[in-house]
Length: 461
Image 1 (cartoon, rainbow, N blue to C red):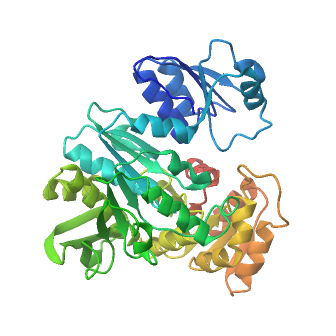
Image 2 (image 1 turned 90 degrees about the vertical axis):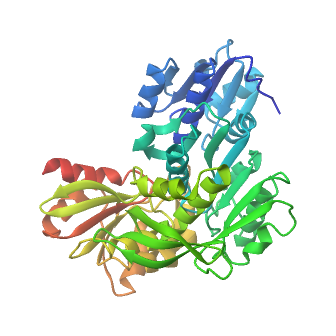
Image 3 (image 1 turned 180 degrees about the vertical axis):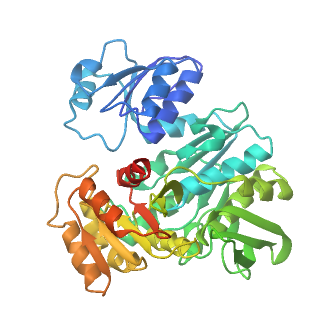
């Protein structure tokens, strides 16, 4: 594998530079005086920020973008092998690294590398860790998979020896990393276009844990089935968080909700009451995310009171139960949930938020995931009062696998719930304008572009 010498800046080209992680890595290299270029399919705010920072941007991925002055090419798992720019890169003989391989090499420049992993909750927990470290004046470098207002985007370049990032299991990306502190929030079935089954996924997370050095630390949620499996053969320190104070070093008691569904709780450390935590994001799941963030902060050297204040500073990231506005007295929320467990958590949070009817406008994400979890999606979405389905967002896939949103509609209706399927965003918007009433709560949900529906409704008022 090609090794980057960060003391000798070179020209690095990113295929798919507009991705949330790729753009962050590009900024890190620009900060270290590297020459950076990259391509993507369209202009976005992230692309424009890179251009303003001195990055050479190509809109459209073409073979001619691969020029002779490039020293290294970085690409993502979303790039297909027949992508013209990828093909030209292979034929050029220029060294190539995956996004994960570059990120792993960047980590080696830091004394503390905190990796936040789990089937869901990574962006939120990474953001909470960020707030804790910033409150503690730790000056960390951060790469987060969402837009976090307190750092003005998805990347923060600090001047300390602390690095924090999300660690995604898809294509075993996180096995290219070099962490010193790992957080594992949950381990569930997902990405079944890559993994064979849940045992394959669990094995991947176990290998991720084994990436820790002997003096490393694993922070793990004890609500994960057989959680000891992940660290049984390692020598690292283990810090547990979770709902059961009998087996969790960090736990919560006296959990209460405010009028917007945000939780407050008594922090328990080794069953001892250790302060009151007031969260500013909704949902019981965020209690357990915050426990992991507090544990990580304390392990990194932040004092307890500062860590508690830090998680309270977190007010959410884009696309995580994000209020977009209102139309006709209807509150519009957008959420990235695209897995049944995430839908469960989001709709459970919504029940504590002011509402008459809860409308869920769901855009399934990938044919593979829809087919694998069809019954689970139907059950999870049925927690809403009324469900509207958009067409499946294909993302990286082209084969429909014989599955469509109509199949999901039929499964939901079989459970006795009102469910509507409409083929275009325009039709969905017109339907909602006609049927949502004052006091309703509308949640656009999915990892694709369904957020545009809510934004259009809010703008149209």
